Image 1 (cartoon, helix red, strand yellow):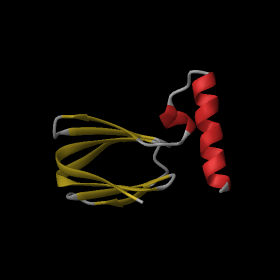
Image 2: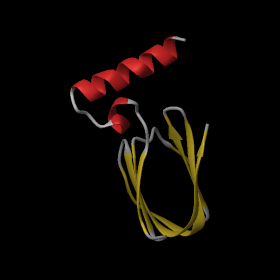
Image 3: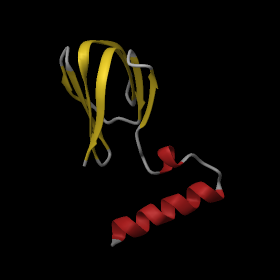
Image 4: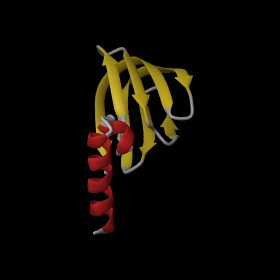
Length: 93
């Protein structure tokens, strides 16, 4: 109940101040260039990194990226850039 109210309040504040919902609600933003490049924002940590799979912690779940030949190009506190051949991106609650 409190989480629902908190989310509604964040959405209202975001609309009033014209702020992007991904920032207010701590949602991930994933920008992909074809199958070769992924830029993920608002992550909370790298859980798994192999040549074929990447798992990132999000505020409310995980993001799993499957593919091959992954290379970690950049990793900052809340941003990560991955290159390789991407086959699948999943959001897991």
